[in-house]
Length: 272
Image (cartoon, rainbow, N blue to C red; front, side, top):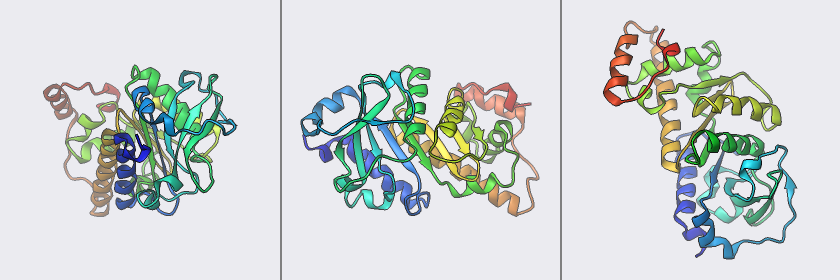
């Protein structure tokens, strides 16, 4: 099968276009990665080039040894993926120790995977373990309203979770575990990868202060939907604050009723 005919590749390309059209990916901002299923890799591996040298990841991810990932390229623009996918995305293979990767397809005119690759892979490993192999997608976007709120709200999980939950009734159902907040750190390095991976042990959403949002999900649609929901809630909150703040809101007891109705568990620490 031609790689561009694979359904997961089509979905990946669609997500990059959808996310760009939301205004989350200016210039080369943001990145996306998908952990390819073994059966999907088997459909297309005849197209792989296994001659390129392995390169250090900058992190150890032994639970991902031998796996393949579809990733956006460093310095590449989301808006160009739909136009020329072979130039802007890549499939990489992780070596048998989980310490190195090599490009087996894509980035046809040169380049390397996203500069946030250590963060993506460390968090893929965390979510693979935490979700019993279900989570396969990580999306990092420069979500405008979430970023704006990181200049206003206390950078605390409890504050961001409760404020976002209150803005739309669906929010506690879509992200019942809440959201984590990572204070500002230099992007692309091991330190932010480690800090985010600690958040991802508890949440599917990590907000990077003054930078954007980092989401994990089982598939491409779910992950995009999660990012979209968080950012829409943040947009509502920005508007509410600009109109003078809340005069009424959803109360803790009402959140408990909602949780019961939709069969989700909401941590009590966010309901106090």
